[in-house]
Length: 216
Ligand code: TIU
Image 1 (cartoon, rainbow, N blue to C red):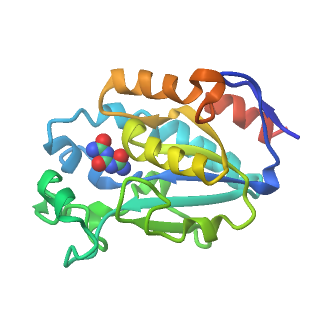
Image 2: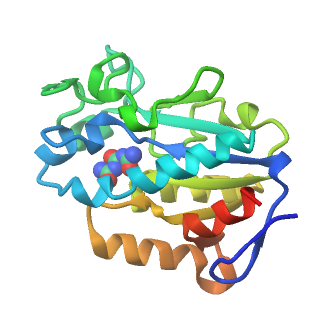
């Protein structure tokens, strides 16, 4: 079985029961001039994940392995958005440069062109930060026992999803160069939190270490 050099130790996985999760690589979070940037965030901090993630996706697909994409967003009438989220999420549902912000069907809600899902790949639409809450992700994962976790943002949707996955019994490998935060400090500490205490939430590795194992 492939074994990846990782922190806090080697991560061994069975490719047949491992899925690659690509979390919320949406235009609203990543495009210059979009929602994320309009909140004062530096989208370059997220955009550095695009190239390594595209390379990983190419290798993962070439190996015939499973890919699941997620998108954070809400139905147009916002009936799936808790009022508390709406109050603090301020701009959700408001018109933005790329359509209504975080609303399903809008241009900005969809995944960036560089990482467009292929036909047959599952796309999970989620109303929350975690990908398991109010979605059918558990069913979509079928017999998977391990997850390779990528996407944005490290301390928000990636962390929430990893924590949910842990409580459901999945082993998680998080790829440091394929997850991004608007805040460099949160990126650093967010990754440390995953591997601390002997891997309290999972393992952290670079994508090159995983690619090496799946292209042997
Ligand atoms: N996908 C995700 O992380 N949603 C967020 O709202 N992230 C922020 O960092 N704001």
